[in-house]
Image: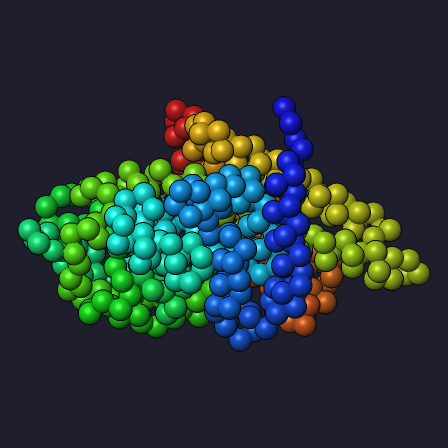
Length: 376
Ligand SMILES: Cc1cc2nc3c(=O)[nH]c(=O)nc-3n(C[C@H](O)[C@H](O)[C@H](O)COP(=O)(O)OP(=O)(O)OC[C@H]3O[C@@H](n4cnc5c(N)ncnc54)[C@H](O)[C@@H]3O)c2cc1C
């Protein structure tokens, strides 16, 4: 066993840490307050090569591996979840199927610019009546000899008003299983609707998207007809690993602020960190954070070595998101009234961390998945 990061991994961590400290942390509160989509920062993240980290070099990526990808994601989430969440959507769900199944036209027009952060891709799975139960979705595509015609109503689409294209999960009129289509955002019949006012990740704009008889060429089917669910399962472990990395990033920010505050805030003549009640909280937070990181990097290592990881991915997303919410809550208690003040970032970490309980599958669904892996 080797728990040391290699030189490239250390360099990636340092590069993203520097970028976050210098460019993201100073504007994170403003992004949240103004509910402003961090488009410019997202483009800079693209220039740092983030979107290509998990893709092979012959496709324009860097093949840096999932461990490196997690290291970068933790840093981005430590700086701003409003930036990290759309970066995650773009790098995985937004473009994965374009890389896997897109022809030359799709690669040149959408995938490659998206890798560089020059185009934005959104993922459209969720519908008003289909959340965890994806098979309940109603979006329907009519299959003709020379084209597809897609209609439906999606919701909770991250980055939608800024997206250049969408990866859309749909039924087809000739198959009972789901299929995946590429839909350019400027196609006739695509309408980005109302943005949802949210508790957290408020700069990561999430909107409704309606598709009204959108005509698509035959090559915009990504994978075979009826192969959508199979495709989703292929990428699911990574989505969960990356959601865990998001959770660890925001938890790290809350933990660091709380420890610093415990060292400097003086009450009854000594720093509050000298009181046993605060020491107990700090120790619990440190243990949770370290445990989450160990499970994360173990699962990322399974991904990098192409070993079975569905169970571990569900476990780490479940554990890290619960730990992050607990850490943010304890940080808020350590800062007490200042943890309740909008002027301090701890309230933002607490709000943002709640997203990780839902994204990548709700924790209730994950427990069911884990139990299934145990043969129950
Ligand atoms: C900030 C944010 C960004 C998002 N971005 C995107 C995006 O870009 N694209 C996209 O397609 N979607 C996106 N989503 C949607 C997200 O994927 C869904 O919210 C998620 O799948 C859960 O669906 P739901 O909210 O409808 O909850 P529901 O599925 O309605 O669940 C409600 C409750 O019931 C529980 N439950 C449901 N089924 C079961 C069961 N069988 N057993 C036990 N408990 C169950 C759930 O755990 C939950 O507690 C986003 C969501 C958020 C919050």
